[in-house]
Every structure is written in C-alpha cells, then in structure tokens.
Length: 354
Image (cartoon, rainbow, N blue to C red; front, side, top):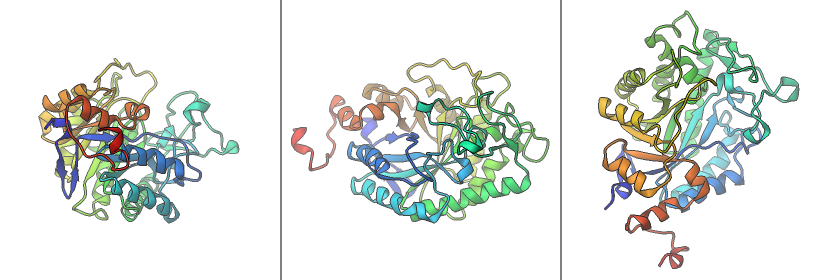
C-alpha cells in the first residue's frame, strides 16, 4: 500500500488515509451560522475520499470574524447545523474537524471578492483588537490593544467554543495560531510590542497560546486530538522564525498537542515569500525531524506523486490540501487511481469507477 493511503491513528481516531481537507474560508455564513453551502462544500470532500475534513477558520466571538460572513461558534444556536454537517461527514467514513480562530487586527474586513478592505462600524464593521495598537496595513482597521481582562475573555471564548465543538460532533479541534491572526499576532515581535507578561520575550509571546491550549484541554476529551496551526516563519526580518517554531512545538508537545499544522506567512504585508510547489514543506520537515511531533504539510500540494513523496521521505505525516480540493473534490479518488491503489468508494458511485 502507498504511504498516502496508509491509515494513521491519533489517539482514538483512525484516519483512513493521509489526505486532509485544509480549512478554507467560504465567507458564506450569516451571523456565524453554517448553512447548506457548508454542508455541500464539506460533505462533498468527504464523499470524495479525504480522511479528515477540517471546517474553515471559525470565529470564537463576533469580533473574531475576518469578515461579517465568517462561520462562527460563539453561541449555542450555531451547533444544530454544524451537527448535521458532522453527521454527514461521519456517514462517509471520514473524520470531522474544525479550526477555531480569532482574527485580531485582521478582522472587520470585506470578503476577498469585495476587496478585503476595512469595513467601518457604520457599514456593519466593528472595533478590532490585537496585542498592540498596530494596524496590519493602511487599508485595515486600527485595533485597540487588549488589556488583561480582554485577554482573559479571549481564553474564555476559545474554551466555550471548544465545548460547543464537541457538542456539535467534531472529533478534531485545531487552534489557529497562523496567517497573521490574533494568536500569531501575539507570537511575533513584529505585531506584539507589549511590555507586560504577554510581550517581549519568547516565553511571554507564546503565553496566550499556551494558556488557550491548557484551558481547552480541560473541556476537550483526552481521547480526541488537538492540532495547532502555526506560521513557521513570517518571511520578514525581525519576525517569528523557524527556530522559535521548533521551540514552541517542543513545548506544545509537552502540553499534549497531537499535531502541528505547518504553514507560513500572513502577518505583515511586506513579507517576501518564494512561492512554488511545496515551498512550505522544509518547515514541516524541520519541525518533524527536530521535535518528533506529528506534522502536516500544506501549500501548493497538487499531485498524487508529490503528496506520496512528501510522506515517503518523512517530511510530514499528513498532507493538507486546499485549492486543489476546491478544484477537484474527488482528488483522493483520482490520486488512488494514479498510484494504483484500491480504496473503497461510495456505493452510489462505484459503477462510474469500475
């Protein structure tokens, strides 16, 4: 059997293969509520054969949304539709996961197809918050620096969201600490200019993320995995770097995190990213080899042979695929055929693949 289609057990879940649907924002919710778009979007990837379907960055509070149309889980009423989605995913023998997020200074902006610029309060926007009163760019809102009470509220929001995630039937929870959103903003000295216990030293900048992980573990079953997504580098001088990512991973491993989802960038507009196939893979490989932590690779993984090579070489344990799965929800089925591997298909579709 190919490595790509070899199962992997993480705690009490069993992934039938190593192909994971990466969280991809759909900007299609109203007041945080999932709807039939999310059911079909996520459900079709489960039908297509992916092992783990991770729902998009889901806001733990209204002010944590990137846009007014982000998915949310800040109130109990959000659970019902999400439970329908997780039930369908499980019926396809896939695992439902979700990414919990707070956008911080990158909140209150328009959807990508509407320009991503700032949405003013009188236009339906809201006041944003960050480690420090430093805007992402001239076209983004100016955030207020969080005080200690605000930080405590952030932790509480993540914990309550995690409780709802479990009630909604998800079996993997991922904490989003990447792509320039709030937890990444605390990690990087480029966005964190605080002089208190949450700023300055490496130990202080990682404090909020560690507090969130420790607190969500009190409400999340020990039998189910916790992932953390990080940006392994800011691709900018003076920013968060790969060595800090390794050090953070070692600490998260000790805290009981099960996998690091390794991405990069997103913190500052002046980042210089050498984009190309597998451009983020060296960071996942470095973290895996230097810490022994399970890792996932993400970023321009578009081909079955490419994904197989990543796993065979030991550079990562899972491949998270985003845009290729937007183009082809049945990528896992096509990949199995290209790698001459037999996999089970939905019985409704078998006659089309014989």
